[in-house]
Length: 304
Image 1 (cartoon, helix red, strand yellow):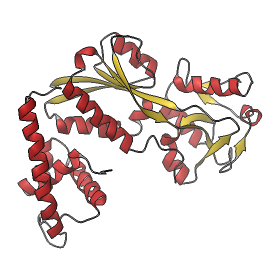
Image 2 (cartoon, one colour):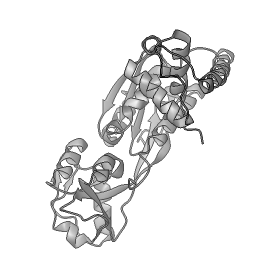
Image 3 (cartoon, helix red, strand yellow):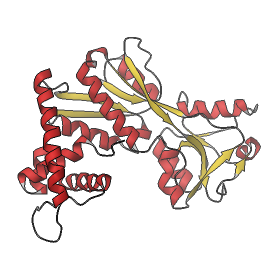
Image 4 (cartoon, helix red, strand yellow):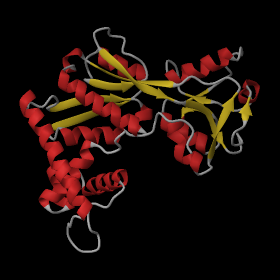
C-alpha cells in the first residue's frame, strides 16, 4: 500500500519547477511549513532523501531526479485525465463542510488542506458540532458535505461509512493502572463526564451499562469533547472517549486505557452530503478524503 499522497507529490514537483519552497507554497496556496512537512512526509514514505541538503538551494539527489521523472509522468497523466473528463472544478466557490469534534481534534486540518490544494479556487466554510446537529444542518440544506457519527435523517442525502473509531474508558493514571481490568461497579465509583444526549458517545456509555445489567449512574455533563478530554487528562473525571484523542497522552503515561469486562462499542464515522453534491468527480474527491482520514491513524486502537 502506497504511503504517499498527491499533495506530497505536488509539493515536490513545484519545488523542483519553481526552485524554492516559498514559491511552491505560493503556487499551491499553502504555507511554507506545510510544503516542508509534505516533503518530509514524502521522503519518509519513500525512505530516501530527495534533495542534497549539504549545499544551498534546491539540488536534487540522484534518487530525487529519478523520482521527479515518475512524478512528472504521473501528474501529467492526471492532468490529461482532467482534460478528457472536463476540467471544471467540482467544488468552486464555497464548500460548506461539517465535522464532528473527534475529526476536528485529529485530522480535519489535513482534510481542509487537501481540498484547498486540489481546488485552489475553493473556499471552505467549516462547521464543527455534534453529529445530531450536523445531520440537522444537512437536512436543512445548510451543509454540503459532513463527517458525522450517524447517517443523516433525510433519506435523499447520500452517505458512506468511512470507518469505526475504537472507544475506551479513559482515566488519569491514578484512576486506572495500565492494562487494568475494570468492572462496572468500579467504574460507577468514579466521577463520569459525558456529552449530553443524543450524543453517540453518550449512547455508547448507556449501552455499555445496559450490557452490564446496571442502571446508568449520575453523569456530569459537558457539550465540548475537547473540554471533556482535558478534564480526563487532569484527573477530574473518567469518560468514554475515542482512543485517537488521547494517543499522545497514553504514550506519555498521563492517562491509561481501561480494559472493561464488557467491550465498548466503536464510534462510527460517516461522510454524507446533499444529492446536488454527488457526481463522479465528487465521489473521487470524497474517496481521497476518506483515504486521508484512514491514513491518519484515527481508526487504530491502543497506541503502541
